[in-house]
Length: 210
Image (tube, rainbow, N blue to C red):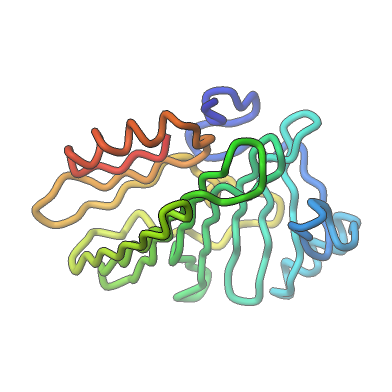
């Protein structure tokens, strides 16, 4: 299921911010806040660059958790079982400017919480990209390094409190020198179809997270 196309409160700029709850932090193991907070307390934490968490819901289901840090944000996308299948990490590399430094995606074994495949992208402002992947079933690990890429799309303005749409955008594009664009498609569940799509996409030098 493609969460983007089935998300009733989303647009091309990111997830709509119409249903947000706040807390001290998001406890992934228990799939809940460690301590629920009033909006005013979370706003103060945001303004003072202290840690807090914002859970964004679509109806009765939390689809994304944004964690504010002292120098950036972590954005965790959750599937219908509240598993963290996609994670963005933004670091404040310049005053009021965030840079997408890391992206991790995971595929799970059926409806369990066991990760069967994972990929992590490490982005650098100078255009370097390191890609590390692991197939947990076979134990195979791979690492790729790109020395020259246009990562200008990784930059975002520091968000206003309660408006995290720029950090939850569904598509990001990185132009690698002498190759087609590397498309980072977010907000999708990873089913068995991913394996078939991955083989054909890599032939086109395009990675699609769908």
